[in-house]
Amino acid sequence: MENHPRIVITDGYHITKPIKLVYKDLHTYCFSVVCAISDRQLLAAGIVLGGLYLGGFYTGFLVLKVFSFIPLLYIILFYYLNRKEFLKLVPV
Image 1 (cartoon, one colour):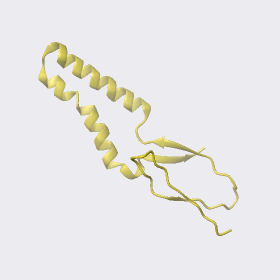
Image 2 (spheres, helix red, strand yellow):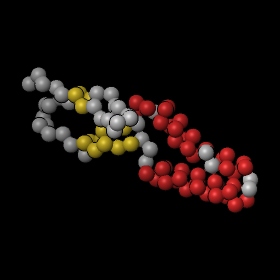
Image 3 (cartoon, one colour):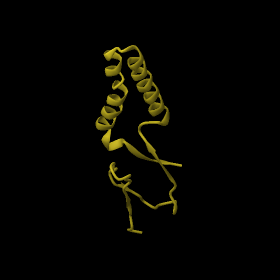
Image 4 (cartoon, one colour):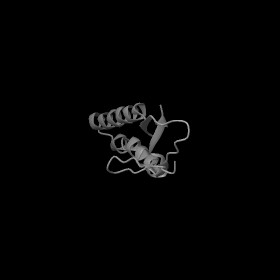
């Protein structure tokens, strides 16, 4: 009755804060691990990055090559601003 396990999620680089499980009514918990950056955001960032870089490569405009790093900077800043909530446990 006093056993309250704690769960920590890690992928090797990111670590969540411990989550305490309290077994009152349920004896089994089901969770899904999700990332704060969705697959669509990652795909859109890759497409924008590739499009801007290729546009700068073929036209020779250095400005387009520099702007191609904006999606990468966005993802890095999004991670560092939301580091504690980057990985989440979502009940299934």
